[in-house]
Length: 352
Image 1 (cartoon, one colour):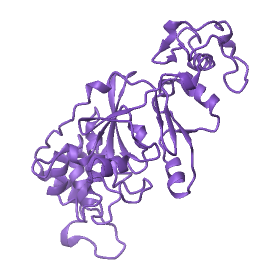
Image 2 (cartoon, rainbow, N blue to C red):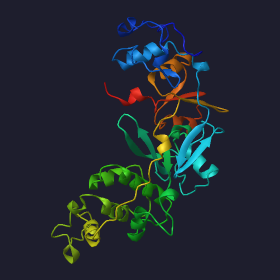
Image 3 (cartoon, one colour):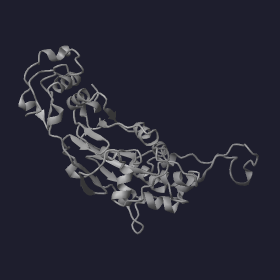
Image 4 (cartoon, one colour):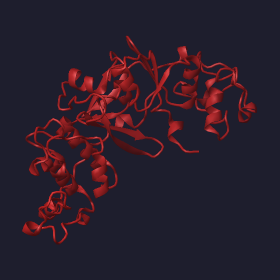
């Protein structure tokens, strides 16, 4: 192909010397070593993925590579293909303004309150399993969900047919003003989508990124802990702290027994249904390039392409979770014309 030359490493990183592991393989990269526009490195770097990636990076011509120009992802089970997206836009903006899914709220806008929480699922080809994460849509770049399945509060249930999580929070009074409730619902929903049933500790941890200024969290936890696999271990109110015998002095110890009482009052917990992951996303997608008005977004799928991009554009900003860059661009008015996502680089998800 035109983007692959036969010049070996050719000072992959700003003229650095070739790794010793790659010297013996400084030869023409065979066509069989090319996968979806990049070098696989299986035979050009030995067993060291870093050396293999560096060797292949020297042979890649970034501008002429066959980049994919359309985003592809799923929202609530429906396929979305978009070629008119802007990389500086957030997932929250697209959900609310383009798709009309206004159940996902805009609160703080900086990933602190959790009102914008959605579930983002992707297929891990190495583990052969679907990974579910709760994500702050107000910070997540729209391009970051390419190849993923996004689930919002509208996608798991309706007012007439609510999801068990939604029903349980409503039954146990876990919502007052309701603004934070969609995010809380999706955080709990994500925890239930994972392969192992959540424990009491898992339930508490899943709400680390959610704020509620109305309920004081007690009814929310009462509802959520009914889904825990070890809910029988929830501590009860000790003797001496019950009813009229409880000390009324200000600052005295208190142990609230409402959670245990609530758990005991529910004889059985309904199994939360799971939304199937789209089969179309299990095969993986080629590298992505989105040319926007303000930002150009690259999403390489292997280390060789990542290194080649960084060599050609040394000032490009690499993006992982976007928790800092999102704040810098939204509140500090910083601009990064080129962004490189590392989320799909398979070598960065492995331990060697």
